[in-house]
Length: 145
Image 1: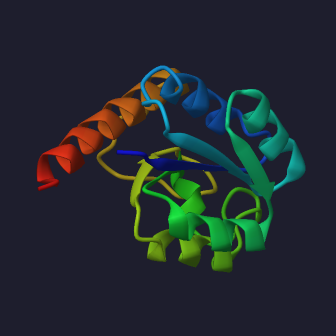
Image 2: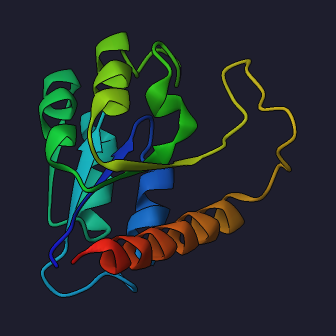
Image 3: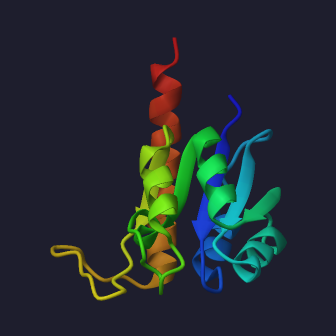
């Protein structure tokens, strides 16, 4: 089964770059990674990291997340005005309303904190996100009749 995997990131795109690098090692043939950046620098870096294609900005994110089987990125992508204002309320709402599964990295930033979560280095968070992705792929494959 072919999957569309969307990575949403902003600022410098560093989280997206790490996610793409690790996902490329585990995705199947025919699966596609799409990089959606809040700015051109983030998109460009994610495409260079191996995304099949990329797009930038509010409308690209609003339209493209609807076709994703999986959406990955920092937790700020579902919080309007986060990431120093790069995530607009329209973007956050579109990501939350998208039918695909969201796998979010619990970055403690922008003056909000997630109580009860252990702060991990970014590399460990991206490893865990990819583990969750693989688990969800298995669960989806098991539910196909």
